[in-house]
Image 1 (cartoon, rainbow, N blue to C red):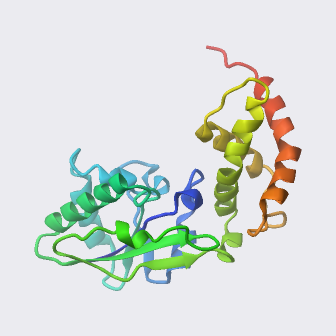
Image 2 (image 1 turned 60 degrees about the horizontal axis):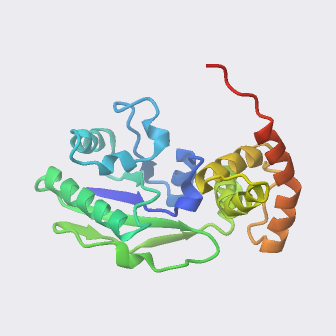
Length: 235
């Protein structure tokens, strides 16, 4: 069995989940994102990191069976793990997942095509975190440069630039004696960008820090006003 694993990067893939069609267009005509409607209604759009918890139930065995039944021999199932190579611990979790995958397959060999989505060049070599797994073969790492294709998906842009602006928003509200986590700051920025980033008005992927600072000067005051004046929910 051959599978393609999209292993990041997190700042491209989250917090807004990208459509399955985006990955299939990017990876090639024989690649099809693996969906899990039997697991939950929303499983397909929440990626596949829940499969890394291999000891909790029979979700991995069910996934393997579904792939064997639903995919043609020429089709390659795609699984998406946004944080699989973020740290050494994450890499160990991925290794354990793949070891269990090999075990559940029995005598059938497993071939893994690892892919990573990058923007404006890689910051580090992720190959070192692709740990060896007995009974499994890695294909060469596929590094997909999103310098141009990110324009095709507005969610990609919102993820990337909300990540870049999140710490600036934390610093901005701090000037008023307020504390905000990086995650919450990014969530608020995602909502703001979601309101105006379109096919016609989108980010220049090469925007520098000075340009982003001018953008934050424009949108942060309105965001803070909206946050402090937000009506409380009735309990």
